[in-house]
Length: 100
Image (cartoon, rainbow, N blue to C red):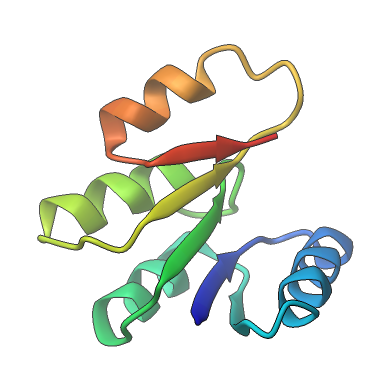
């Protein structure tokens, strides 16, 4: 299984990557929404994990653009606890689920 993780905080990215690799997933890690969108456009992923707060395109916009372009990769949005609007915004953008 291959997963794309789009996370700009190094500690969080490392934690997620190690956890996924520990379950035998191949992990591609990028730190900006633009690079995540580019990776989704050229690689086949079984899952994409997108942080909401990225320095350029946020996770919702990456998801929205990926879906508009015909992308079908399952997407999970990484949200901070208490992110009230994230679940609704994620569904509108085409995300499959949120991870808090």
